[in-house]
Image 1 (cartoon, rainbow, N blue to C red):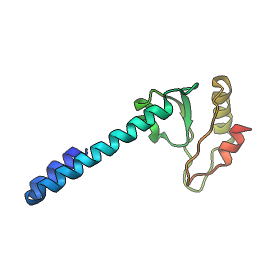
Image 2 (image 1 turned 180 degrees about the vertical axis):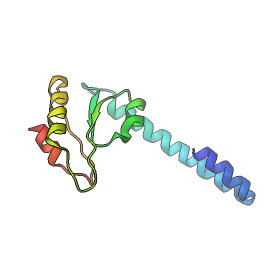
Image 3 (image 1 turned 30 degrees about the vertical axis):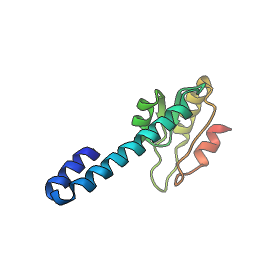
Length: 116
């Protein structure tokens, strides 16, 4: 995507081609370092299954060979239903998931119930 944006900007503003190319190279370097950090941090996980609080983690799971068992989709201002929580607990228990992560802006109530 960044390469496509760089091409578009270079076409529109050819006088800044060198700046765009340098910025693109810098971005690629930073993204490569971030991906390597993720690989190193996650390579020795004893459990590769996860449950997320948003279904937007598919790319993360695919990149780092994780399996998303399920996603708790909470709308802004609402929390997971009792039925959803029971379903999540039934997913967590047989897989012995060792951790629950929540989003910074999300509710921790559902995670607390599931962890108990």
